[in-house]
Length: 387
Image 1 (cartoon, rainbow, N blue to C red):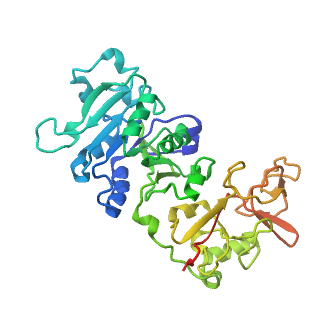
Image 2 (image 1 turned 135 degrees about the vertical axis):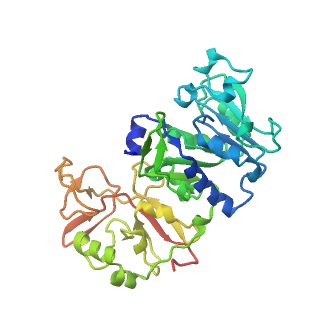
Image 3 (image 1 turned 120 degrees about the vertical axis):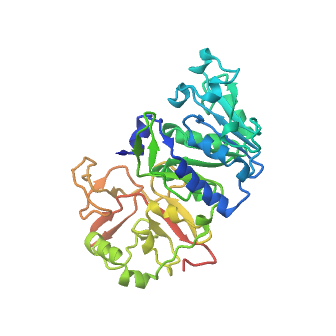
């Protein structure tokens, strides 16, 4: 039985011992290979933060070495990690095995050739190349040198170091496919990259991860991030017109009536955009700016829409300037103290949060209604429409 938990909580607790399931890796990689059968051909793939005994990444890419036409597979392990503490047959049967270095040094594994003479290259050809000089931290000079050698980086990086890992990848402009927290998509380091189409979401959402004791831990907010193209990224959202949404979209009509107290898409007072609470409610015939939920990124087609900005994080250079007005926020009084209220996307009372200034709002009958959740602002791509 899998235990439900929050990836954010794991990240805050610096609990990074979660291993990706084989079928989740296979499902995601298939999407890139289907879009481009040569995506991995003649490429060196680095799997940092890894270990063949525990990691399904190494097993998967070794098993598919010939099918993908890989040039070289490199896998490194991190000494303090639970997986690294286990002796593998690759290590024990190697003349390079050193029990004094086993617990304190990272390990290096490669796949390059048919070492057992079977006539094919697969998991039996994973080769232990010895110990790293340090503990195998991806930020070390020796793992960074392996990054520079590689063409593509693929892994489930430490949750608590995800932002640092992204910065590390872009220091050498590497292609990558990695797992992270969906909520990181709008943070200071990640959102500008997404907005400028330097990285995007993958195609699947892995839910359950293996812990060192063999049990499963489930999360509801894990996604793949990549800068390698896939077909889902070019699928066009099929949308209804504004009039048809207001007439036939029952979920939207209920939200507007019960929570927003309006019958049409509300216009923000502090930014020239309309509020669209659901992705499937984006009107196909509206050519202005729209505030949409973060889940839009799962459907983002850069040929159909452009991302204008976000209002999710103060200090984010891609954040929109919505003025100096205090924004209303359910759960706060006018003086900024908490009032214990809870609510859905828009509040029904004029409560203010001091020094916020980053959430869009609109007023209805003298009552300011404020978006509780962050919004991403989009508009149809110039020269096209959302139809």
